[in-house]
Length: 170
Picture 1 (tube, rainbow, N blue to C red):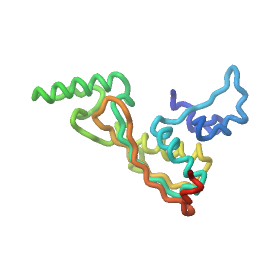
Picture 2: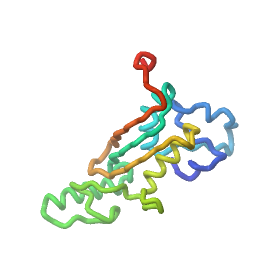
Picture 3: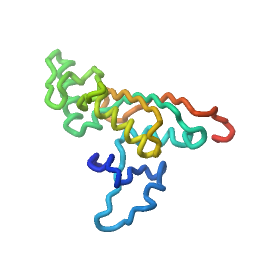
Picture 4: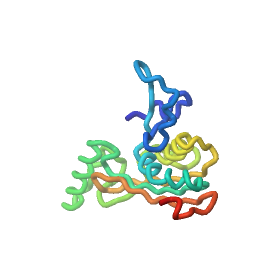
């Protein structure tokens, strides 16, 4: 699971349940590259794409609440250690994160880019547009790191180009 080829125009970015057609021109075998998106993009688009197919999403505002597991085993260990330290009244050890993680939430630890968003937020914007093959869909993302070991969560607000008919969705 690497981000190396995600935005390469010659490499399909695929969530099999969302855009299997992106694999149509891939000749599988030695040297074939297929990229998968960021985990937060996968979670979001698995839920939203069926609605998008019925009434086309015009605007999506997504907030993610990402667990320590998303930053790796060392981040999980640091959260565990910090939790113990804070409960004992000690200053938290900050090796992975630049600030206290235990009992705290903060903007995702990815670097901030020129537009004021962090790289994690921009991944969601760019990957959604590539997967849906829609450069005009408006996506706003806010990615927050929360002090839980596992399980990301998301809040998604959608605006559609046309009203949804609940009968056709079912």
